[in-house]
Image (cartoon, rainbow, N blue to C red; front, side):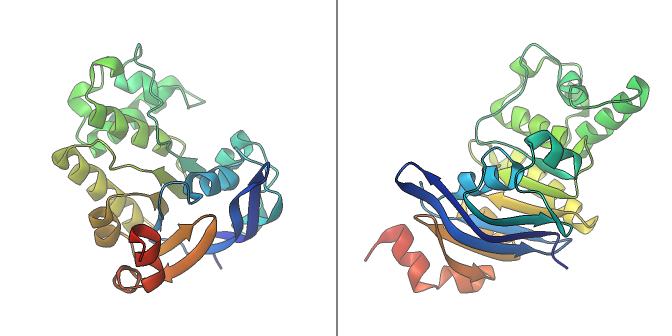
Length: 233
């Protein structure tokens, strides 16, 4: 059974069809990539999955339960976490406090979990540093582990490599691989093809809202439709 099943999802904005009948299925414990030229519908599809956008047609099922129509908070509580293209950290809070804002329950346990996650991405020494003083890449890592504070089963990453230096990126990619090894499922939108082809086991390709290809990285790289979508004839 698929952890996530997106079936024929459509999303229109006025006369523009941003997502046109897209279907994808994700199995547990795997890393998937979602690629395509700018404006192909990748982030819109993320928003449809997580409840930020109401779909116009189709279905979204998570663990065999329909979640289309739910609020983002309800989707998150069912076990789906996500990051965004633009960093959403609180610069006036410390790195640790940025993690605690999404938690409920006893503070001591949450702080312990937060410090464990910062250690997970090699930021334990910056737990008490204001997020506004961290580098762009460090802020991305803080946002990434904040998603993990809610212990999601499915993690959606929107351009995790953008603007991150190679050292911090390697830390992030290693953390993503460890999450996969723990049985979590990851779907990432990414423009860095080295990241996609080196990390993902299955890649979905969108172009102008349509899914034009799906398969292992090696097959996708050689697909004529994908080459045309990115580079033209």
